[in-house]
Each structure stands twice: as structure tokens, then as C-alpha cells.
Amino acid sequence: MSPLLAILKRDLALLLPGGRRGGTLLPLLFFLAVTVLYPFAVGPDAPLLARTGGGVIWVAALLAAILPLDRLVAPDLEQGFFDQWALRGIAEEAVIALRVLAHWLSFGPPLMIAALPAAALLGIDGPTLRTVELGLLVGTPGLAAIGVTIAALTVSLRSGAAMAGLLLIPLAVPILIFGAGSLSTGGEGGLALTAAISLLLVAMAPFAGGAAIRAAREG
Amino acid sequence: MHGFANPTRFLRIARWLTPWLLASGLLVTAGALIWTLTVLPAERLQGETVRILPVHVPTAWLGMGGWTTIAIASFVELVWRHPLATIAGRAAAVPGAVFTALCLLTGSIWGRPAWGTWWIWDGRLTSMLVLLFLYIGYIVLAQATAREGASSRVPAIFGLIGAINIPIIHYSVIWWYSIHQPPSLSVGQSAMAPAFLWPLLISTLGFSLIFGGVVLARMRALLADVQAEARLRRKALGA
Figure (cartoon, each protein chain N blue to C red):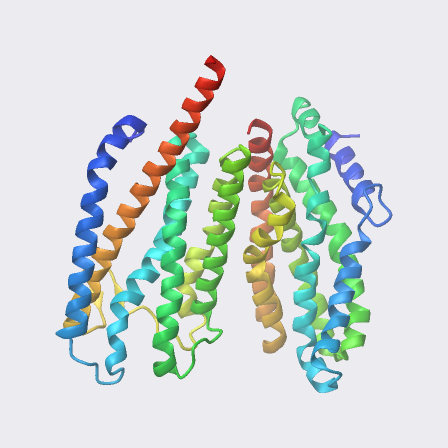
């Protein structure tokens, strides 16, 4: 088996629900908790909830993306896995790209499933739900890419975990704007922009993350 | 380029240049602002509120210019590992953040009479606000890396990623044209009357000189910090 495939298999075994690193369900439960909190805060006004529910799901998704950051890169760096991979001549960029893929598989599709009960609780109608789900499908890869990048950037800092949210939010704002914006315009234009910014972030993550890992090793 | 790379030579030039930049900047800015407040006529549609523009526009440009400085310094840091670039990026962050905050503040004060609201979720306002959050993130990250002795390339990578926001701010008034006007000025042409244009350009020059002076002063302070640290370490090893 090629080493890259083996790394991906290990990443998936660690990160997927029920994986050895655990905590995958935490962001999902947090996501549902935020969507449940919202009706408590604004009152059980069904038309208002239906109109604003899509945006609430997007905000909840962005907040949920902050939770898994400290377990994405730090444990492997502490245990020396990144050094071992580097000794084998495997580029940090490749490792980070695989990590983004594995993190997205453990984060994106489960979030899309969790969005179904959230949509039911908020009373979102069918066409809106379709736009939300499509938006999450194209937007969560970008969120996963930012997540891994920020996790790699803050890995060498003791205060990294506390800082990660502060660094992630401004970078994730474009995804939120375009993703939630696709709800009001009802469609394709907003989704295409969400996909565009998401692709840009996914394309950047391996290089930024790889450079961050090397900086953390030498720093 | 590597001629200026030598910190000793840089310090010699900076020590001489810093007071000149600051003094001339303060003088030029004060002149432009006094001109704006006294000589400039009230504009036909905006009335007296037009007098805030010679503060608003330069701070907006320098808010974006600050991050452009960070991005260039980050690039130099990552490619050539230049120690002065690290310090230049860190030095530009705080004045850049202050100018961005001033831009949002003056824009808000101008927007209350002109647009009838303190704040609106327009593309340019939103992207400037995101820029302020990026500055805060960068400053916190740079301080933490310096404090914990982590690699200074960490904030540099964040500085380069954040640079995506700069073209978004620039084109925001064209892409999402809602309430903020599109650019009135571009190279070689102006949609403004000369009477209003000149104070604006002169105050931009003044604020830019102040910005340059503050960045140089902060670079000198950060370099002095590094040198004091190194001296203490040498002493501790020698003792």
C-alpha cells in the first residue's frame, strides 16, 4: 500500500465518528445545541424561525468548526508522526492535504445529516433546506481547510487553542456571507460563490499548513 | 535590496528618518485638516459633513496599506527568512489596525447624516470590519509567537492568507454596489472637484508620513527588544 493511502487510512481511523481520537460527535452536538438555543432566545415565532433558520444553521456550522481544531494536528506533532513522515520523504503538503480530506469526511457529511433535525426544529421549508444542504456540501470543505490550516498554525503555541477561534472566524466570514447569502437570493449564484471561495481555501490549505508544520518543527 | 538588510545600517537610517517622518507628517496633516475646516466650502449635497472625508479616505487607504505591508513583509520573511521583515510585519500591524478602526469610526460618523444610519451591512463596510478582525488576530498571534519563542513564520503565513481580503475590499463597491460609493479616484483621473481633491491628497500624504514614522519607530523598539534579550542571554551564559 502506498504511504499516502496508509496515512489517509490512519487519519480516517482517528477522525471518523467512533475513531480512536474521539470527540467527533462533539461538534455535531454543539451544532444542534446552538440551533436549539436560538428559538429559546427569540421566542417560538414560527414564521420568524422559518425565515432566519437557514442563517442560524450557517452560524452554528461555523461555530462547530472551531471545536475540533485542537485535535486535528497537535497530537501527531507531539508524538512525532510529522517528523517520521518527513524522514520518509513525504511532503508536509501531502500530509496536510490528506488531513483536510479526512477532517472534511468526519465533519461535512455528518453536519449535513445533523442539519436535517435542526431544519425540522426551526421549521425550514423544503426549497430552503435544499439550498442549505447544497451550501453546506460546497462550503464545509472550505471550513475544513481553514480548520486544518489554523490548527497547524497554532500548534506550536501553548495558547493556541484559545486563539484558534479568533483566527478562524475572520477567514471563515466569506463562506458564511456567500453561503447564507445564497438563501436570500434563492440559489445558484450564491452557491457558486460559496464553492469558489471554498475551492480557493482548499487549494491554499496544504501549502499554508505545510509551511506552518515546518515552522513549528524549526521554531 | 540586501544593502538595507543589514540591521545596523537600517538602524542608522531609521534613527535619522523617524523624527523627520513624524514631524513632517504631523505638520502636513495639521495643515490639510486646518485647510479643510476653515477654507473649504460646504459641499452642496453633503453640507458640512464633507469635512470628515480628508480623515476618512486616508485612514481607509492606510488600513489596507497596513495589511499590504504585512503581506509583503510576510512574503519576504517566508522566502528570504529576513529578520527585518519579521519586525516590519509586526510593526505595521498596530498602526494598520488603528487606521482601520479610525476609518470605520469616521465612516460611521459621516454615515449618520449622509445615509441616515450609523452602520449598514454593505460589502465595503463588512469587508473593512473583517480586516479589523484579521488585524486583531494577527497581533494576538504575533505577540504569542514572540512571547513563547515560536517561529516568527507562523504570523507571516497568517499575514499572507489574510491578504485575500485586500482585493475583496477594493472590489467590494463594484461587486456588491449597495450604498458605499464606487471609487472616485484612480490613477490619472478624478470624479471630485479640485477644491475638495487637494486637501484630501495632502492629508493622505500627511497620514502616510505619520504611518511610516510610527512603523519605523516601532521597528526600532522591537529591534531594541531583541537586542536587549540577546544581551541578557549572553550575560546569563557568561555568568
